Every structure is written in structure tokens, then in C-alpha cells.
Amino acid sequence: MIKKIIALLVFTACLCACETDDSDPANSQQVNPTFRFTFNWDGTAVTNADLNSFNFVNANGETLSIERLRYVISDITFRTNSGEVLSTNAHNLVDISIDNSLTFELPSTIPVGNFNNVSFTFGLDNEDNAQNYVDLNSASFNVPDMLGGGYHYMQFDGKFINSSMDEQGFNYHAIRAVDNPGPNPTFPQDTFFNVNLGAIAITNGTEIEIQMNIAEWFKNPNQWDLNVYNQMLMPNSTAQILMFENGQSVFSLGEVTQITE
Amino acid sequence: MKANRWILLIFAVCSLSCSDDERGYEPTAMPLDIPEIFSSNIIAPVIPADNPQTVEGVALGKKLFFDKILSANGTKACAFCHAPQQAFTDNMITSVGIDGIAGTRNSMPIFNLAWNYDKRFNWDGSALSLERQAEEPVENPIELHSDWDNVVERLQADPEYPELFQLAFNTSTITKELTTKAIAQFERTLISANSKFDQYSLGQTTLTAQELNGLDIFLREDKGDCFHCHGNPNNPLWTNNDFHNNGLDATFTDLGLGAVTGDPNDNGKFRTPSLRNLAYTAPYMHDGRFTTLDEVIDHYSEGLQDSPTIDPLMKQVDQGGVQLTDQEKADLKAFLLTLSDPSFINNPDFQN
Image 1: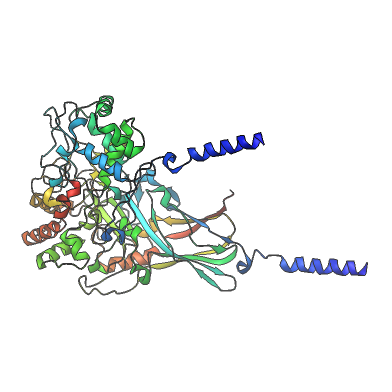
Image 2: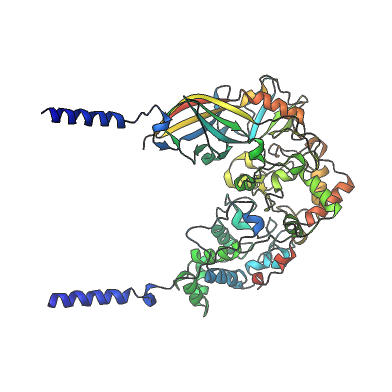
């Protein structure tokens, strides 16, 4: 009888020892979380259906339309509670007018668990920006070599009502800030940036919403005047740095949901 | 024992029915020969799963493309408006059909169409696949003015075609769908990737100072800014295959994409044509309004017309355009001509 009790205790102890701790990513199953990209204008949802209409007023009081809006994110990273950083090397071109670009399943796996921060890069860091991406080439997302090469971080095109009350185009194109365009361009500062989404619990089927508040591109900390900065902004490093500064408050974490199969 | 014999007999019959000879003929796969300049820079071409490239399919498609049998009165083939020497367009402002009636659109050149990832074809995006694109001109009253039922009857009665369809598609019963599949297979083989600029990109030749300056103007956002729609050295298609209103008119007689989608925001938008082979594809624009490349460049420099749907990528619209100097225009033209590919128009595989 004693032997049986001992055996039972040993068996129970083994079971306890083998129990997985789902809260610790180091011991978890591997999953591919999905990211969902949404757009809003100060909280009002913006979709493909809202394009081409003068529906928006920026902080400077200019009425504007959106005709094209696409941007690239890269280097999604997950930081565990113990400080371990899990980096991924994927990128995704988000296009408001292309439905299947608005969700992105991470191609590499990460362990289930609680992460104290999930982050991504808006655009491409300088190392990634020097790579050759056939998908971005195919989308004509390139930046010419004399402007430093690589890729746009964002193409945001539309029209606004200018100070003469005429419709005028704008091309809010974010790239790596560049001076001295030509064979030997120089780079005053980096203009890709890191976006921290905060703590997220990852389980099987987690979908993470990344929100872009488009109005923020024109608002904070620099009130953007489209009459001053509208077109030919790629070779304008001052404009690029303003975009970089305003971009810091553009993105936020939306809903985190679990998709059940 | 008797039962065993029966089993053996049935097994033998099954084996015979599955022998290689009887298992069925399969056409010979013919994957596209993708040029290095494409494979190293852009994603793979679009080949429909239900219409793989085959040697026999391409051969049949080529014969059909050059055969007047598709027209109602037997006078014109696809190749009449899509001639190899003009990079598979013609030199007419707008093409003329079998009844001598001119259409409203300039014939589009045909090359590198397998890399049209969005699969919207024609100037107005009305055809949603290359196979479907091949359907319409056959019945269009100002093009080949045929009836597909009649075309199929003629093909079926022809002494050669049933056997060629048998070889290409494993059936001698000809249909409209198989006919357009074969034409699309041939069209997908029309690949142009050996221009002077391609050779420059591969390090096989050099460009002149004028051509390089023209490339610089093409790529500079404060000069030509052509690259946002027409690609760049990393996108050797030299088109984004997207739809834009490039400021041709203040009001529209041809709505373009807008007539297809019904969305007034698409009025006046047409598919961006590739800049390859411009030396052979005049006149230019969807309605062939510009006779020369100089006129095209003048349009973007000084001739833009404002309208509600003009693309915001068009610069300095209030001044008519990007205001290039005469020298800049000449340099830009010199660069654009480096994108022409004589080996394409002279490729013996593409001739009748």
C-alpha cells in the first residue's frame, strides 16, 4: 500500500513538473499572430470608401481628400517579461485600397505567452532599406538612387483646397531624409521610427489591430501647412524630419482579439 | 481457384487500362523563360492554374493570333492591330476594324502582360484576365466583328485546328474558352527585356551622358517625376499597371475606368502604359493623340489640363506641368528611347 502511495506521489510530482506555463513564452507553443491595419481620422474610421472625397479637415484648417495611402512596416518584435526580445524580419506593405494588405499573418512563429511590449518599425531601418525586395519593387515603392535609394516608407496622396480656394494635389511621401541629392547624397538623420504597442498576450489565433490616425500626420507636434508643404517633398529633408516627428503619435494599439477556428 | 482466376483477369484488365500508352497524352509544359532582370527584381508572373503554358498551347495561340479566321469576313487577324514590328500595336491613331470603321482607342502594345499583377487589361481595365481580354475584340463590331459561335464553327471545320486543339488541350472539341486560352498562352510568351537600358542594368553596356541625364530627370521628383507611375530601374516593367488621370483633358469624352466601374472618381483614368518600346509604338496615349514622344513630353511639361480626377501625382498643374527646359526634354527623350528593345520586335518566335 505504501509503495502504491509513493508511486502515486511520484506520478503526481511528474505531472506537475511537466505542466506548461502558458504565461512564460519560453515554454509555449509556437503561433503566427495576425496584424490588422485600420485607419481613422481622429477616431472616425476611414476606409477605401472614403477616398477621393473632401471629407477631412486638418489641424491647419485645410479641407482635403485622400486618394492613395500605403505604407510599409517591418521588424515586428516581441519583448518578454524577462527582457528577451524576439525579432522578426518580415515586412508588409499596407494599402488602404487593397483589402488583403490590411491583414498580415506573421510568417515566422513566436511562442504563446504574455509579452510586455510588441513593437514594429514604421518604414524600413537603414539596413533593411538597403535590401532588394521584389514585392516592393513590383509595387513601384522604390526611392531613386540619387535620393538615397531604398523604398518609400509611406505614399500618401490627395488633394486639398489651397489658399486660393483651388483644388491642389499633395504628395505626403515619407522616405529616409536626404540632403545633396545626386551621386553622393547625405542623410541628416534617420526618419524611420519604432512604434511601441505595449503589453499584449499572444495565444493561438491572436489578431492585433494597428491603428493609424491619419490626422496626426498634420497635427502633432508640427501643425502642417499644406500650402507650404504639398509636393516634391522627397528631396526636402526639412519636410521629411517634420513627418518623422509627426509620425510618432500616428499609430496606436487597437483591439486585440482571438480568432477561433 | 475459379474466383482467383477472375481476380487475376480483372487485375490484368485494370493494368492494361492504366498502361502508359493509354494513361493519356499530356501537352508539353513550357514554363515562361523569365529574364534575369525580371527574376531578380519583381515577383513571379501570373499564370492561371487552369491555363498552364504548354508548347502546343503556345503554338496554337500563335497560329490563332495571326489567323484571319477569327474575323467575320476573313480579312484581319489580331496581328493586324498588334503587329510584331510595332511591339504588337499598330501605327494608327485609333485602330480600324474589318468594316473600315475606326475605334475610339489606340491599340495597346502587347508585351510583359504576365506581370500585370492586378489582371486588369485594356486601357480602361475592362478585361479581368488575359483570357477574357482575348474574347472581346473578336465580337467587337468595330474590330473583328465576328460571332464566337461562328468562329468556333469555322475552327472546328478547319482541316488543321481540331488536331491542334487536341494536342494543346486534349480535346478536338473547340470552344471559345479554349481558343482564348491558347491566345493568352502565346501572349504571355511575348517578353521584352533586352533593351539598351536592360543591358546597362546588367552591366553589359554603358549609357551616354545625355541618356544618364535623362534618367536623372525621369527619377527626380522636382523634375520629370515619371517614376511614381512608370517604374524605375528596380521595376523593369516601366509601368505600375495602375489607372491614372494624367491631365489630358479638362472634360472627358471617354470616361475610361470610370465607365467600367461606374465610379465618377475613376472618370478619365486609363491604365499606365509601359515605357518600353516607345520607339515602335507611336502614336501615344489611349486615343493616340500624340504623334511623337516630343509631344508627350511637352504635355507633362506644359500641357496638363486640370479636372476633378486628375492624379495628385501630376505636379504644378496650375502651370501646366513640370516645366522642363528644351535640353531636359531632349535628355529625357534620349533616356526613354533606351528602353526600346529591337530584339523583341525581331524575335523570330514572335513572327508569323
